[in-house]
Length: 363
Ligand code: NAD
Ligand code: TYD
Image (cartoon, rainbow, N blue to C red; front, side, top):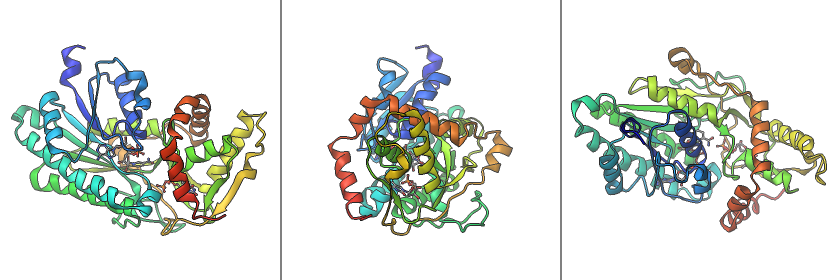
């Protein structure tokens, strides 16, 4: 590796999870500088996502917690990254309903401890390095709460009204990030993104859960009436937006990122079924729509999310490039072609989660 690759090192947290792994893989392919990847490897972290980087000196994997100040300070001192990109979080709403503790621990306290370690490091940097340093915090549209059917999409000015333990813990982390900028001038950037989908997503989330269940002839558990709306973004578009914000975003500012693609859950599940009918003409489970089963709703289920991403388009020139139809087809093909990855994640721990979350939701 040449020295310029090392001198533009970034520290990514949570880079063995879904979005983090996609970001690391793309960064190394497209930017090519070194990535130090700090991940605790919870149930959602999976080193198999990073298999293609084995033996590549530009990827340094470190198993550890963002809430461990000694470890974080050591990494910052040893590798001197110019940027920290914080993906590490507990990310699943249903898990936050069955147990919020880990969400508060990582999303609130972990972010606080990470911010403190980064602030101490940043304050000690020479003047020449301090100005170019960035801390980018990856957050969610869920902090804004739920929209009525005809309300305008969330802008960066929308009030925070988080409704689930997950979104409340992410809102808490966003406020901490904001305060570390306002109080100490830490050069932070915050991105609030809509629902992502694509390769390497853990199959507890809607799209991969429905793809794998349909392939395997299992029921497709649609919560409530299936009319809750999400704004879907293909994961590589999210990664491109984060690179754009790192490159050109103004410290202290917030950027909303969305797919301009609102879909009701039932519509998404039906689109998955139709695509599988086409890609698996010999499947005994065709038509896959037969597997759709309405189950008890999620408590406090947000009805609609939609992001207004006009700011990032206008000021930084980013917009989504992958249509939902293309992205969904690409995602379904990826799950069909990665049997080994799928059997690895559908292990004992995963089966326990499915039993815990769905047993209580009688059809
Ligand atoms: P994920 O659950 O797939 O991955 C999270 C990763 O963080 C895992 O690798 C896990 O091992 C790691 N991690 C958890 N706790 C940690 C800790 N204390 N220290 C170090 N690592 C830890 O999540 P994701 O879907 O990839 O989401 C990444 C980020 O993007 C999260 O902050 C999430 O809130 C945000 N986000 C996600 C979506 C989405 O649709 N998935 C949308 C908007 C924003
Ligand atoms: P999810 O992927 O958990 O993301 P989020 O809750 O963060 O938006 O869920 C997306 C939508 O799909 C949400 O409205 C809940 C719904 N859903 C189901 O209907 N059935 C399921 O089994 C799951 C996991 C989600």
